[in-house]
Amino acid sequence: MQILRKKENILIITLLIFLAAFFTVLAGLKYLDYRRSVSEGTVFDHLVFYASGHGRTESVKCFGDVRVTPTEYYAFLPSFSENDGISITFENRDHVVLTSSDGTETKVLSGEKLPEVTIDEQYTISFCDSSGEVREKGNLIFKKSSDIAAAYITTASGSLDTIHAEKGNSEAGTMTIIEADGSLNFDGRFDRLQGHGNSTWLQDKRPYQIVLHKESSILGMGAAKKWIMLANALDASLMRNAIAYDMADELMPGYSPAAEYAEVYINGEYRGLYQFVEKAEIGRNRLDITDLGSENEKMNRTPPESAEKVKNTGENGSEQVGVKLEAQPEDITGGYLIEHDYGPKYAAEATKFTTERGEKYVLRNPGYASIEEVEYISGVMQEIEDKAYSGEDMSDLIDMKSFADKYVYEEFLKNEGAGVTSSYFYKDRDNADPLLYAGPIWDYDQTMGNSFYPSINDPETLDFCTNHSENTLIFYELWKNHEDFRAETVRFYRDEVRPYVMKLLDSGLEEYFETVEKDDDMNSFRWGLSTGGEVEDAASIRTFLEKRVAFLDRVWLNGEKICTVYFDIGNPGRNQYLGVASGDTISIMLNLGSGENPTVWIDKETGEVVTTETPIDHDMVLTASETETTAEPVNDTE
Image (cartoon, rainbow, N blue to C red):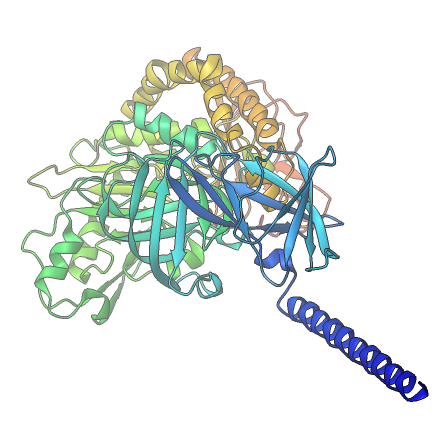
């Protein structure tokens, strides 16, 4: 009997040891599982939603807003998805429990569908091990846009690290665009996705250029290979570019870029509400003039970009920079696409020229022009500049209507970069059309009261396109010296711009508000912006337009005298002119100081101090007092 009891005790002890070892091993495995998930990032980093609807399924990575304590997590769903068509995958956990705000719990395994979700409701999602123990949990909110297309971009590396490391870096990949109703808009390869913009490239939400493998139409726009993806990161309303491009398409003859909204997902990560915009370039469905750049490429065995660079410098400081080509077309009178630029942006370009008065121009097409081509088109621009200053007839050189239209457009919208940057001109071959035209329009996120510079945001002055950090006086000189330019300016505003804007104010602006609201603040939550900020900023657009129309009616339609105020800051590369209605004050004076103290301005003729309380009743030159006069910060726009 004692022997049996000893054996039983031994068995019990052995069993206990075995069970202890088993649970120790199990605990160790759970610990290793936990450590592995921690080392690989939170389990939320591996949580993926599969949004399905209308026969389509696309993946969306979970987004964690680390700006919120505790962190909130989001599923940003495309318009085509259905609320009962969402499945999930995750790693390193047995299952999740989704708990709704009313306390309803649903257990879901990786790969299974979630119950029908409620948009904007806050759920709790708990990641559990096989025993049901909660290992990690957080708040989860489903957001969904409505009636906006979704673009899914996948890079070859599956990452944006290389592209974001330097603006010139690029990767190939694939893109699919799905309309809100589930229909396929585009599905194909792209050769390059790369950065775009200048100051906008420095924002968290970045703009891109995408170059498709072959010419294709996207979102109803004309077929082409190159497209710009505007982030509108500097425009809280997200609608200034849309308003500007639609207005130009309606009012300005010739080519104006089209733009369409889309929710953008890159490598499964929601990146925000973007605008796909036609690139300002020469092409069959773009600016349809002679493509001199393509002709250069066809005629040279050595690619023009590899050709030797040549630079000519004139005694007056002008320069022409081009390349030495083996061959070029016999007729080099067109076509050219030219952009006015400045500073480091100008310095970085391959083929370019400056005029005798310091205006800087870059050749966008041909991108690598022969030195002879640069000499030709710079000679044309020099003659235009000379006659703009002298008041001589220019009818054999420029299309005056296009110049007046562009000036009204820039002036009316108070474009921060007006005339200086993103300011285009084009010329076809002489046998097609010998005149040079102003356009196409480009880059309007910093307009309508949205400038970095307070002095530009005043809706009750004229700027004459002289409000940036470097020289551009072509439109000011045209206004001052050419009656036909002034007459066309007033006609275009009175007959076309004003009626269009009045319709916008009556009901049209609401359509833009409604379009952006369809995003359901997904863009705001993704980028940590103030929710509802779009509508709030949209209200400021309405106020700006109302004041702008009232002021231009006074000085352009009712004939009130315009007094010209010139701010002389002692910098020949920067000229600031303001047009002020006689008797008005300047509500926002130009401030050059780097500190809080405003610059003191002195009337050069009378020696009197001019402030925001001084009525302006004559043309005047203002000089800054002897205080710190460092220039306002340079702002490179998109």
